[in-house]
Image 1 (spheres, rainbow, N blue to C red):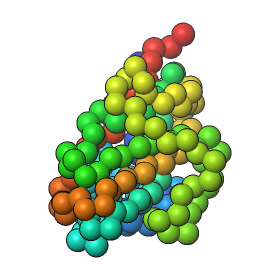
Image 2: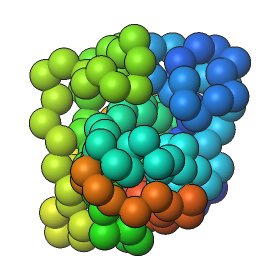
Image 3: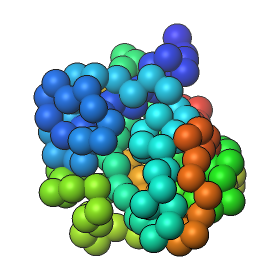
Length: 164
């Protein structure tokens, strides 16, 4: 029996029944799955105010291994950077998995955000036991004077290795 991609799931955070991606700001993992790995579904469209002034926003998702097997050497990386030249996304692994922020403008404390654009530079999440979780934070930066964008796509990918 092997782990299949459907066993590796992302969930919103921000409360046990949170359905709103704009409130996915850490804390309790929601029962609501984030089913689209495109980053424009995680962040709201870049509106005129953010495009003009620039902005930095944060979101948190929980990665859960729903398989009956351990997901060995799990990693996360950005497999497609945002399509807008005025935005970038970076990710960070929160090893405590309990941190939350008061709003999307507040950065989580003590995390190092990077932009790993390949499996070779992916962030290691370690071995993830059956039903275990890992917290991943996302930071979207909008450059001042960027163009407003309604569909600024990018993708995040989770991978696991083989059993040792």
